[in-house]
Length: 347
Image 1 (cartoon, rainbow, N blue to C red):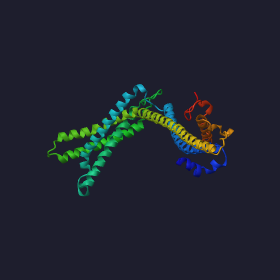
Image 2 (image 1 turned 90 degrees about the vertical axis):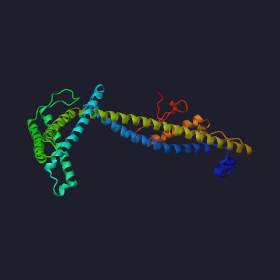
Image 3 (image 1 turned 135 degrees about the vertical axis):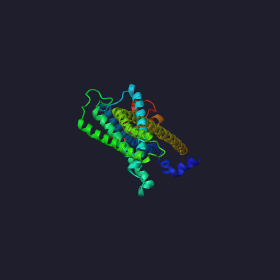
Image 4 (image 1 turned 180 degrees about the vertical axis):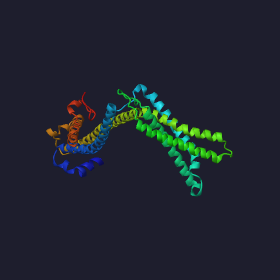
């Protein structure tokens, strides 16, 4: 009763009293439904466009890698990935160990006197040890790369490049210089501690180990470099594939959300229209008049399916104006029954 009084005397008083038609109520709720759907649909499709732009970039990058980059095949990815991770862990351990061994020689190269006696000196010696380690491993890797040129893993066709003796000589000098630095300062350190509690044979062994480890590390780094590109490119391709799949799933979810929202809103507005139409018919009977038939342009308000189809067509018209390039039109003739999803072809 309260709802009838509200609609009859407040909300739609002029529409109740001016004639015996319900056309204006039908158009009002159709427009209200479309307004709500436009706001929500535009928001959803803006997200879809953003995702589509990212998906296009990922697809382009993936296709470029697949066409031009060296990639691991499916049947070899696991074994090569295992090898890569194992060598990477060993190289990291070698770098840490060599930095510790080089810190031993840095104690004599950077004596703990004056301002170098405290924490600043320790930091400086540690930094020098790390730098020597990096240069030593890098020098050995580049030396091996020049004197033992080979095809990168995953390359097809073509011969391995020739030895570049100039570069090999340059990196060989770098490696020899690092090795001599380790050896020389190591010997000085041995003399410095000789007679103490550290046995000189142990110290010499540490020096020899300090000289060998960078070469081993360089060899491992060289081996890693041969499979690095193919492994990383395959990881990138797989990552792009996952992102594309996630984007496709998200787009489908958004389309479902758009479709569900239209159906729910249309259903709600239809039932509200039915309530108001019933009130108008009751008002007409009270006043001794028959409710006029719906005009031609408002025939969609006879049944829910026609109401839904009209809402869908109007919404598609709005989408065509908003997205002229995407042409996300839904042919209501193909829908057949109410409930066809937005953007779904009639296949």
